[in-house]
Length: 172
Image (tube, rainbow, N blue to C red):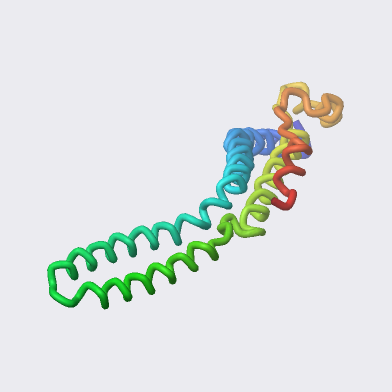
């Protein structure tokens, strides 16, 4: 074997090894893209009521604390009217805060798009590796043109699904 053939063989073997390594992570990338799409859908459905949770939780804690103050004031002579006025002012403030509750901002626009874009780029890179470095066969090592004739042969090509890509990159 000549030096050029030996080099071609080593490149083909190394490329096939690296491609196989990349393919082993392809399933995880696909799974991450699917989970991210599911998460975005879930977040879009949950966002309206998530914005109301924090004000309601604060209101719940404040009402419980106010009830304790009123109970304590009942046992002290003359303490109940001022306590009730203070509790009333606090409850009015809480009512306004709950009324102003807006949908949550999570995920914020742009947070998940960058990650989605990078994951789709990884999928495309793995697909390109699969086309460029198919499994090495002995016949391919002898003739450089036979590998090109196979057009990808046994390599697993993981093309990014265009519909999934479009859905993930679309504005929520």
